[in-house]
Image (cartoon, rainbow, N blue to C red; front, top):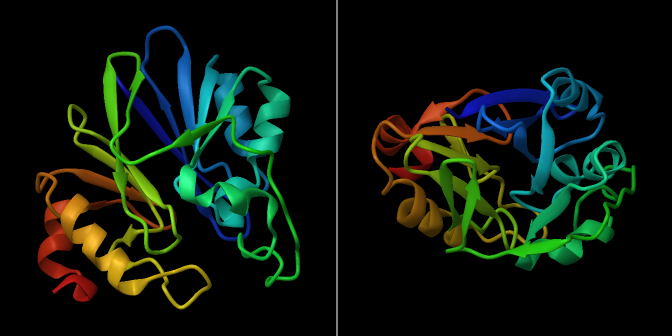
Length: 210
């Protein structure tokens, strides 16, 4: 049985998602942000052993806790969308420099591409192309669990910003419609910030998608 824990981290309250299969202690950590200590403590308290850090995209508020996780769990591998990999060590493109706090992350151990399948315990996750907020942004979708972790592509009643360097509004809208709104109505979506939502609700009510 999949166990999901969402821990808001840092000044941007980025949703760090901890996924465990409930069997052998293996877990994934999605988007560890600044000040990741609460998420690290949850993993340690629950007796889990992270095998992957999955990044949805390369912005500073989604990557900057990866190094501390790696220090706490040296065997974990950092997985970054291929087209955002250069953002990890570039404070300008990961948007930390414009906020006056230049930050970098460790380089990726594995590059992730849309269409890939990743396995955690008994769950199979498909990597979806939800780029547009960044050049390579992805979402992670598990059909069995009816769950998508969508980063900053889609929010409850909103979408990711596209008035920033590297963003493309048309690309983001097309990818949301093609790869997220085509999921079953009752699919839960955990965004990078704010509350969960449900795909069917966003399809019919999100003002940016009508």
